[in-house]
Image (cartoon, rainbow, N blue to C red):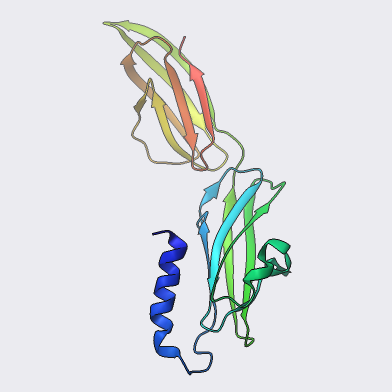
Length: 197
């Protein structure tokens, strides 16, 4: 069962006892992807979610612009569950804050503040020493940096254990392999690789 079908089933069950009553609840709005508070690296960010109400949705405004005025959503006005998606093009690194304002057919409103950190800048890795130490091993030293937060560092596919932060210095002994690399990823999913040879 899809997410939308599950929400609609729950909504139908919850509204079964509301027949004959007036508007019993304010609308509900939620962003399902990407989650509020997360970090993303998209140039043209796609945001999706849903709005639901027992009486029906009249408008879904994002920073004052009603999504239901768009031709693709024209048939959704008045429905109890409306799934929506929109893009935010040409975004810069930093914090994105949106205000979602949903009104039902009886004028009841709900407002949701959505915050997302945008990071399109990849991390860097500087190798200060790569030397053979015998026995098919290499000593690899260097420092990884990111403008926000490092999330993983892998050397020849082996992850390093470290506390995520903006900078991490490392000195590790690893197996010497053909095509060996240090791969650094930040919390937004940006990746940088440096070859060991």
